[in-house]
Image (cartoon, rainbow, N blue to C red):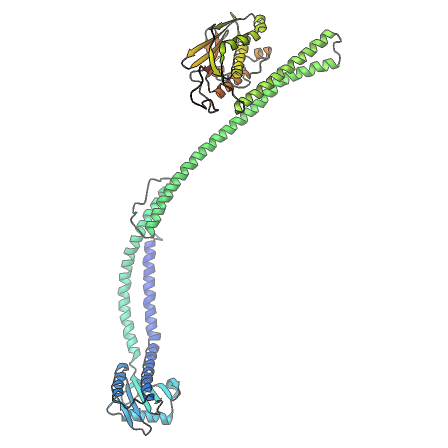
Length: 512
């Protein structure tokens, strides 16, 4: 790789080592001489202070100090001479101290050379000088002790420049070897670092492609790479879970959007159907009302006829509004359901009796069986609505023999009410829509008897609120609508709470 971390590591170590070697070389060349001179000057000062301390205490001529004097000279590699005020030698580290004595007295008579002075204190000087007799350079200290004895010390200054050249040559050889070894070691080290990094990069690449099965398996590593690998494993698990949740949320959102679209469509269709159903009676009422106002017919019989038409159309509108309100209550779950045990056959007989005039007008014969009481556990008012809707539907669609058979059948814990009427079968394509609001198989005939297309939708809503099954079956000679009820009260409390709609099983669903 052009920008590989391995190559960057190698280059970094190479540059670092080179800078260190150059820095050492520069320090040797520029600073080593001054550092060496400073060290020598400090050695002279330390030796002087130790000797001066003993001189101030009056111990300079004692035997114990003679031993200390020799140790000081050996420790700091010094030549030391101490003279009294009469220039007589008190202590000396050299046998022939004449040359040292001459140099000391010469300095006292001539004074220090300012150009060579490195330190100047009260009656104390440190300077550099060259001894031509010995052909060597020295650093000298001369001056007075606190007891007014004269002191002279010197130490040779070796050729620091030769030492610097030798050290730099040695540093160059060592530096080249260190750089070579450093490059090799940095390459090996960088390889160990970059190998798991490349593995982590491959894992992240596969994670970017939503492959969360790959994991970092070096879990025993305790360094930063191990921490990063374990973090990537946790990130992979969290991402997988989050993406799954997002997918589920997205699917749910799509379903919500579809339901919203479906509800909006149903709302538009509902408004259109209601507007269509109310348009005709409103127009009739308006027309006849205007006729009455304009006195189109002055006789009492015509006015009564106009009023009856208006009242009839208003009753239809009121009936449809009441049915819509009832349907809304049932579908929204706001309708209160009251269960009790009652005789279903007695209720059927009462509903048939209420429609006796209409049955006679249409020449329809009604058969009810069985003749004995059949008790069910349900909401009487809702069941009565189902019977009336089925019976009304059967009356208006009865044909041929014009027979309506109302029967009940026992099936385990259920009682099935079946209302059959002779006539034409319902078209297969219409069966799926029978239970839909405002759907009419024969619109002209439905309008003729004043149907609104809501009756079977109410039956569906009642069945779902009671958690019962309902349906319709075609026969060769007619159609039968049916509705299930419980024969006995349920044992488990709350079994009739509002819930999801029951499936109708093998039923053919729709509305006429």
